[in-house]
Length: 129
Image (cartoon, rainbow, N blue to C red; front, side, top):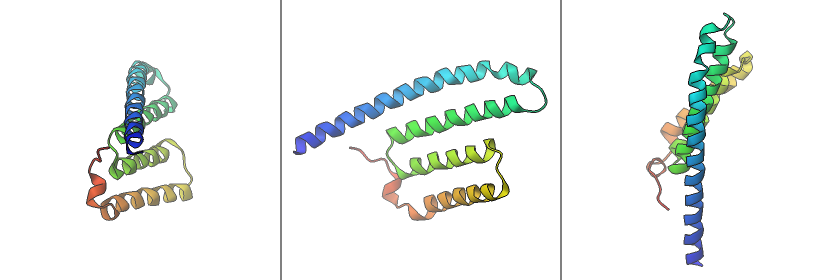
């Protein structure tokens, strides 16, 4: 039974690395597209819709990179960073009403506080399978 557990652990680790590699390739391709899209920002109107779109894409790429890091390094620090980036993207990109903005900011503060005060030292270190 112990051998089966080791085999399954190795298989899931390999699959996580395959998924991480695929996501990194997608980020590279999308990053190149984002770079090529930069010309439309320079030619766009003053309303800033193109800038908001570009910022949204950039945030999505950062969130995917943080997610990849979370797949590779299994730590609570990486999980909270992914959540913080996701909430920050939501605050910056979406046009929130005051109540939603307040709740999102409180959520980020709670994540930062939990990261600082609730995570134990072992949660901050990478765990090896």
